[in-house]
Image 1 (cartoon, rainbow, N blue to C red):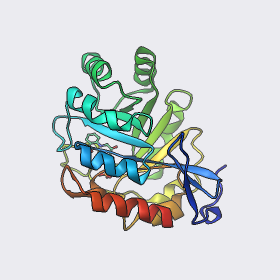
Image 2 (cartoon, rainbow, N blue to C red):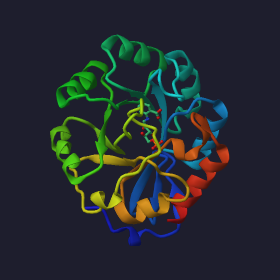
Image 3 (cartoon, rainbow, N blue to C red):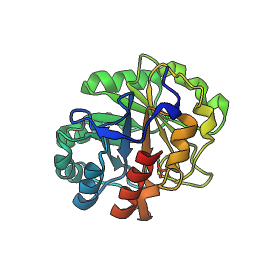
Image 4 (cartoon, rainbow, N blue to C red):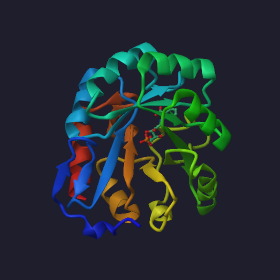
Length: 239
Ligand SMILES: O=C(O)c1ccccc1NCC(=O)[C@H](O)[C@H](O)COP(=O)(O)O
């Protein structure tokens, strides 16, 4: 069981191997910044201490990158943070192209992938898989059990608002109290609508093992802002 958030002290140290923040040496807090597309913003998230950097492979997204672009961008993260390829119900051919060119450290499956599909992808590419699940009410946590022992991690994200063409990156939050007593049986990241102003509350309420943010550190859709990235890490550090 994770310690309650109040056990965390303000002192934060950066583990040089995992690039996770250690709060008073108790538990690491992984932070993934998603939807990166420029060297400058990748430098900012690495300097902030991100454990994971995410690249979006979804043409409708303002954050979309090609496998060739991601291959170049992810170079800066080697040995500093894990590079995550985010895909949505991708075909094997598309995953083949991403994996062979970008060489990600992890695949994030952000569509309607079943536990069987996760198992297949994990074995085909011999890579860890983070499965995204949409949350808005308690019943949305039930599918978690199907991914225990199957996925390496979960990304618990807010449901996309009606009319959105994007399954993620919508800047919408869910009720973090749903996670306060959650012991899902595998590692997870809290995601959806986080920003420098609310990340402290998210940590205090849900005490998650990891956090993920995208649009909350952008000045416009798809445009990451180095100032907001710095503010986000600072706010997480203070919480
Ligand atoms: O960010 C996108 O554009 C995106 C598009 C398609 C599938 C997933 C996408 N994002 C996945 C993420 O991991 C985001 O960081 C997550 O949904 C949180 O986004 P936000 O609410 O903007 O912080």
